[in-house]
Length: 455
Image (cartoon, rainbow, N blue to C red):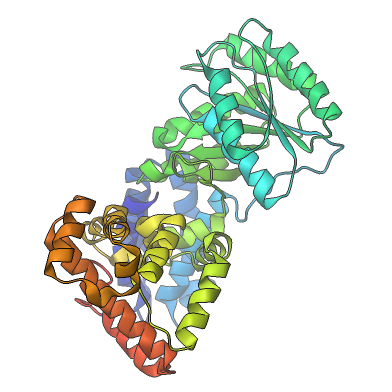
């Protein structure tokens, strides 16, 4: 998300960053670029107008003009106002009520509501240590109930059964009773969606809301609908008292207009964003971090959180001890590192959070993809245990066999071995205490032409 907006704003930011002083003329020019970038990102027009006016008011004031680095000061103003439009800070779920806390999910058909119910159940179980039950009140879409039951089994939460012959409100009441008897902390109710907003849909959701009195009513919306996402959210907010928004399919939205529009138009915070099909692909939305990513400043905090949550600490500790003892880094270790990278969201997810990536050309970023990482893992998996422990055994005939077994070419195996030798060299420097040499080598890799992207 935000790729196109980041690229447009990056050029404007770079022009201003090194300016010793700003004039009305170059501020006006910069704001014009910001306006065009936002409109091209499909941000709602009222949001664009309000944002530009707020930036302009602060830019021509003392805050920027009296700064020793006015260009950087203006960049900070843009970042702060982008964050303010999206809600300033993360809005957490409010679960402070007598259990079970009821979360009602609303939204149009095709927005990913049922999948989001499972993702949210997993999020609450794993990160909040809650006992969760889910129920489907979607009696209209074929197999909707079966889909949620399958997902509930996958994420390990309780599922309250229902049938297409039941009334949705009665399903919800029955699930609430079952949740109380099972001493459940959170009950998540999946409601029916429609292809468009209609009176019958709104009436049904309003009746369910009255029957359940949920502490959270979340509107699930497809980020790729752009400005329409904000308009639809506004219609739902008029029918039921929404407490927040979940943006789905953000991995397919390069513009980010919905994220910048929904909060301003509805007055409801974006609480979560979904980026992928897997049940762990749901993250709390942090407006301040999103603003930094839009301006190419990266999102180091989210990167650190990903590392803490997704990296296998035991494997990392074993590798560190192995290197410290001077033992050789082998292909099993390399495979583990590649799999850890994929678990953290892959190359695209990592690059998106690194500072300065906004200035990297898109065609270069596209070449650094997970397909190459998965190919490398497949090649290593095609080796015998002995070959993985003793890479020196890999002569020409063995490499040809490994290429056939992994469905790749001998050149791919040779390329992998070259990368392995570079990693092994870095690890040996670290193990021998040569930290300065290791840092110099890493610095060389990050210089133009040195990586980390394939040439």
